[in-house]
Length: 326
Ligand code: ATP
Ligand code: LTN
Image (cartoon, rainbow, N blue to C red):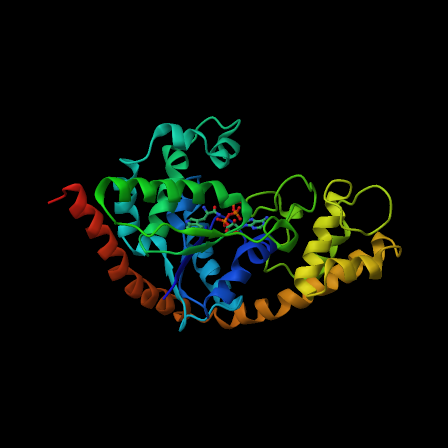
């Protein structure tokens, strides 16, 4: 059966970008493949984290996976650091990755730009991601567009290892939705940047934002010149982004939305957009609350790690053996 793996960092409050670009698709995949979804806490540590916040957010991401429709009886949900093989395989893969390959990673360039003290782990981050994916003999990886380059590196590493040592890894394929179906949801305050959970709160809608906050953020979202609602990424990047959000939350096509709001002005469109976003997030927030009873998420995550562990260990042993580790 086909295997699917994906990870989300507990590096901030999950956003509508995370949901529409990635998590929504996780729920679809769980019925078509054997799925592993991980809260990648070791990745979050590549930038400074407050320990208390990291602890809370790690459980929050897992609860939101389930609230967004992932069934823990169907898919395996676990915390990355609970399966030691992720860190161990990373070391072996670091020995098989070139500096030049990591120097080309645009996410590292963006995240390190202008910062004085950047951790070595931020630089080697994509190799930990490769380890995550390769440990589970993953065929497909649902991610947002920003992860495309990391997936290409993962494939290059897998192919190199297989060429050097014989068949060790499955070479994974990315599953990236096109931009007009959520692959890259943009910031509400700057449509040239992606909506990111580690950016300013007004630029994104958090999955747990209350309705009045959602309405306020959408009302103050930047728009483009003119007043016509139509999909045009070049001339109308801000409105096009809001239309994609509307379309994904309501199920209406971009053409239908343009026909309905084309000439009614931005105000009416934004008001209705707030309503459809609130309607999408309200049931997710209700399910999240139900999972907040003490012990519930902890036991789901312990069961997930127990399922993931032997599979990861088998793959790790395969490479250790080929590389001559006694
Ligand atoms: P950070 O701001 O800390 O880098 P992030 O939200 O960009 O956080 P992750 O939590 O690791 O990063 O992302 C989880 C998944 O959500 C990934 O598959 C990523 O590609 C996807 N994703 C993140 N932001 C967006 C976005 N704006 N549009 C579409 N997909 C996104
Ligand atoms: N790097 C990803 C998060 C991530 C991931 C993974 C995604 C870590 N490991 C494995 C898919 C598969 C991000 O920042 N969005």
